[in-house]
Image 1: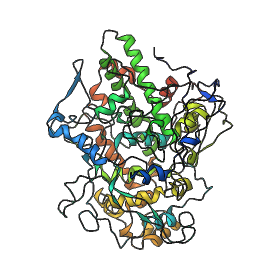
Image 2: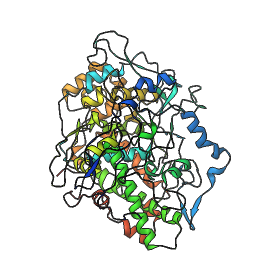
Image 3: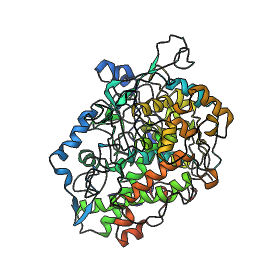
Image 4: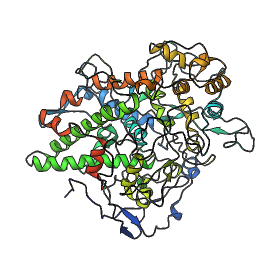
Amino acid sequence: MKNYQYDTHKAMVVLLVASVLGACAESNPGDEVFNGDGDVQLNSVPDFSASLQSEEEGSSATGLRRSPQGIPNGGRDRRERAREPRRNGRFSERDFVGGQEVRTYDGTSNNLDNIEWGASFAQLQRIGVASYSDGASSMTFTDRAGPRQISNTIVNQGENESLPNPYGTSDMLWQWGQFIDHDLDLTDGSEEESQDILVPTGDPYFDPNSTGTVVIPFNRALYDPDTGTDVGNVRQQENEITSWIDGSMIYGSNEERAQALREGPDSPFLRTSAGDLLPFNTSNLANANGPVGDPASLFLAGDVRANEQAGLAAMHTLWVREHNRLAGLLTQENPNASANENFEAARRLVIAELQIITYNEYLPALLGSGALPEYSGYDASLNPTIYNEFSAAAYRLGHSMVSDNVLLVGANGEELPSSPLGLRNAFFNAPQVFANEGGISSILRGLASQSHQTIDIKVIHTLRNLLFGPPGAGGLDLISLNIQRGRDHGLPFYNEARAAMGLEPVTSFDQISDDAQLNQSLQDAYGDVAKVDLWIGGLAETPLSQQGSQLGPLFHSIIVRQFGELRDADRFWYENYLDDDELDRVRGVTLAQVIRDNTVIGNELQNDVFYAP
């Protein structure tokens, strides 16, 4: 029997070690003791050394090249599996459970006149005109500085430098942003096209021996193979998951994953593992495994990236618990309803809560209150499919917000002895972190307690030099990847994007920012203001702080447009879809309330977790 109001876990947590530099197989747990905070701590950890596998053994030795996040190749196969039913006409079937229409998992049939708007493997939309070096698909630019050179010149925040934001918003802002991002878009790298990033000779982290031969591995993104043939048919990338705010990171974007996440067709509950944590990927479904060699040693969730870092895995765990809490309540209230009816009713409420928290708490904290107009009803003329400029540039703003450390906070507001958790130790290591660091409660308290870094052009040392490991052993530069990905996607230049959004193009570097030193760095890196990459220029802009926005004009306007269309184009938007009783159940929900309902956390947590106390 499920606990419908989460209390304390005395269950055994299955342990594994998933360090940044190695991977392990599942093993028997060590001795555990209940630590009084609702989670389990270990007295001893088993020896995993025999199961450690180097990144080289996990990739080249098997002939398998993986994306930077460790998603095994096979993107084309995933695309074909997703699109095959639609070619047979099955995508047009609407889904009904207990006489009520429910969302399809692949996002089709939301708009009844345009079945594939917002569906998985739909082409990303464009706001501006595509910019490829040959006008069609190539990214072999000879007139732009290299991504790592730009990263070193402009984005390099000092190794121990902290730049807290002046708005008082907490780390929960970027964590929720990442969680919602993984509901909206995923465009993985293809195994077929490498376009590695050249590292400047003598780079202190990536080429300290001045060999001049070091590269940061990079594969071009999956795209529609029917595009990219000429300037009239430019390459178009696809979104692997649904565009809607539909909880796909919890439930999956296809039937196969959705069914694997459920306890079974006769149960209204999602699967969990010991300790009420996420289930493990024992079915070897597609997953971002990072450097981990054994897929079954990592968690399975609706989105493949759930294991990327411990805070994200904690958020996934929280929402699986919330579904199961609601499913338990609904089962008690409606004992004559089928398991599938109660499952879908719980799913419907969870999606509504995600939408409410995003639009009532998250976006106002990011953009200021009133940035989006009030909801005025469903608009079938709008295409909500994610924009390329949003996915590959504007919504990557969170990379500037992340701190080097995540706080681990106890029930009395004290930092735990092992706090802070270094971000570099949280990559693809969530099961070990949850066992050693007090489960998800201490991480969630910590995310709500610390101010995030200022949204600006600076990014912490860990993400710029140690992403997923040190250089030469899995380490990457996230900023170089962002710049290269923008060029891979044919994103318009910064000035072109401003014009496409109805903003006046800048004519000199000193018009981008109020910071004269930053403007000079931009000029040093680019030389020509017309050549500035979209991600760089958007983050370099002075924020619209007078209206409460943490973003400059360009990224502010792109995010307002995207989230406005995601809401207004959704036939299943909660205000257009839920009945009165369901609306009463979710009205006024907050992220703090969801956390309290599903963890041992109580009133020590502030009511608005997006602002640090």
